Every structure is written in structure tokens, then in C-alpha cells.
Image (cartoon, rainbow, N blue to C red; front, side, top):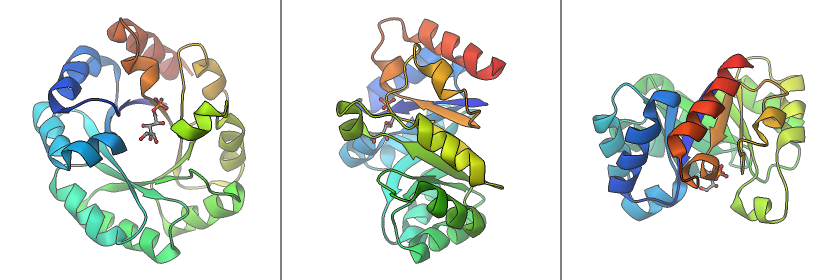
Length: 210
Ligand SMILES: O=C([C@H](O)CO)[C@H](O)[C@H](O)COP(=O)(O)O
């Protein structure tokens, strides 16, 4: 099991500072959607150049033009690029085809997918690399999490890796890892803490021991 740090509410210099602090305790660093909106793909390039040993995920949440957007994120240095599960099949297939060409990976974000199990089976057949259940900020504000959805995709996904994201904290991590996802994604649970390094180290230990 691996740990991904999501950077959402920072600019490029702040992102570098956080990764410098916790980098030894994470496997993947995510350039979050708000950062991409604010800074563009320069943020992906800057973090990949500064920390070449870490895999970088560009959380573009692609909804259309899958092939083109995966190509641009790949050029910026992203190793993994996100596409929305609610997108058209052709968008997802285009993203996967381009990722294969570029030697990159595609993560599908299942945010707002209604038939989680059915869609996960379809996505698995399209050859996506990761399927991620996710309670976004707005769902988190309503007290939701994705732990049941994780158990649901674990029942049906045969090839893709599984991931879980959305409001995971040190205290809720044991519940998140119960269904044994391949990847746990944590943003505010690390970046919102005063001692980020120690929290990241504890989370990484739990993830690696699971
Ligand atoms: O994808 C995310 C969200 O939609 C904002 O872009 C976050 O990266 C993801 O939810 C993880 O962050 P936390 O919920 O703060 O753990």
C-alpha cells in the first residue's frame, strides 16, 4: 500500500516547502486541482524538477479531450493524470491510449459516479491504472466519506489498482485502510497539521504495515 500527499491549497513555493518537509514519508505527490487552476501545469513541472525521485500526479479531473490533456500533463512531467469516471467512455479510452503512448498512468476519480460497482467494472475493462473513490470537499462538508465505496470497488475490480481519498486524517486512516486499497490519498490530514512531518511519518507507517 502506498501514500499520496495531495497539495491543494498552496502556491508553488509553498508546495515545494511541504514536499521538502514530508517527502521521505510519501510515495506520490499530487498537484491538486486548485493548484493546477491557480498555477497551471507549471506547478507539475516545478515539483517534478525539484523532486525527481517522487512520482507526481496531476489532478486535472479531466472531463473531455482526454488524449490531449493527458499529453500536455505528460509533457509537464506528470507520472499519473486523473480523469473523471463520469466522463464519456471515449474520453477515458483516449486518456488511457495517450498515457500508454507516453509511458504514464491514468487514475479515474469516481466522484459523483452513481453506479460505483458497474462503472468500476467498465473502467477496469478499459485498462485504467487506478480507480479512486473520492469524497470531495463538498461531500466532506456534508459528513460523507468513501469507505463503503472502497469496499464496493474492491469486490469487482480485477486489474486496476484501487485508491481512496477525501478528508482522511490520522484518526480515520485505520478505517480507510481496512478494505486494503493500493493507495491512500491524504491532503488536509497532513498539510493542515502543525507537525506535518510527524503526521506523515505515522500515516506512512500505518499504510506500510497494512
Ligand atoms: O481532490 C481533492 C479535492 O477534490 C480538491 O481538489 C483533494 O486532493 C482530495 O480530496 C484529498 O484532499 P483531502 O480531502 O484534504 O484529504
